[in-house]
Length: 321
Ligand code: GRE
Ligand code: ZN
Image (tube, rainbow, N blue to C red; front, top):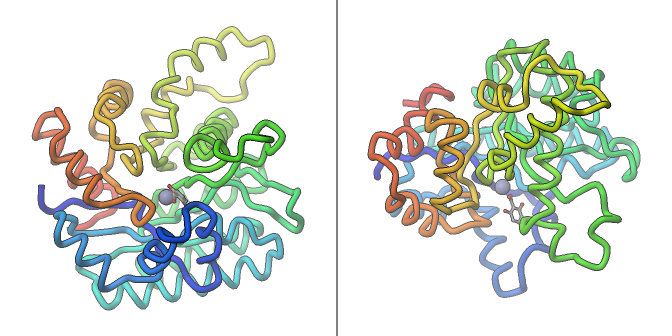
């Protein structure tokens, strides 16, 4: 399929490239590093070869979220956003952008998002989970009330917020099992939990038009919606939000196929949230575009759904083409 749009697709800058080093061996790193720092050559060649017309680009992880000096975090976000805008300007027909945001400072993050959307035409923000604010131990989650004015502005700007993974804040549970911490499992556990916090806080009752995007086919949430709803209904601890988790998930969330190229999983997600809320993505360059595209083209879904998931859902959501 030609004309695909991908939206979990990363780049890095000198200040953040080191954050991606630990995920692969030495031989792979040489290639991964080159692909993260590249915009116009390796990336466009792959996009051309596999029918990806547009990528919405975002900074690598955890990057800005891990910098506990708030001023420094804001500076790195700004450097990344400025560079991204320059690179998009060279190929506005092929690239769009998501803003990196130093969520350590909710007001500063709000202003940076406004700047990126209004001055650069960015399509929203991609944030790598909780932020470490002032101190590495201070992991802040965005359901807390300090962030509600930020969310109000996100809703008013009418742009999606991509909640991207990072390593779990709960290190004790992973002790002795470092292989669990990263993209194999810890990323999804951490990010799914953060998404549930947002939903359960009542955030979407206050800002019903807010749109959150999750990668990796929804970080395992589609598979668990029934049980979560069912058991919250029984909970003696109460539940602060007005609607069921499955209702927020269906009304306020989109999910992408990034890094989860599995038809069984896609079909479960389609049954839970519908083909209109699923968006093709690769997770380049951590995943191979060849693999993502060949799986997607051959997946046993209808051609109408393939076109929606591959292109038209994202074109509508982001006003592309
Ligand atoms: C990602 O961006 O999702 C990612 C990383 C590092 C390793 C694997 C991965 O940032 O999927
Ligand atoms: Zn990613």
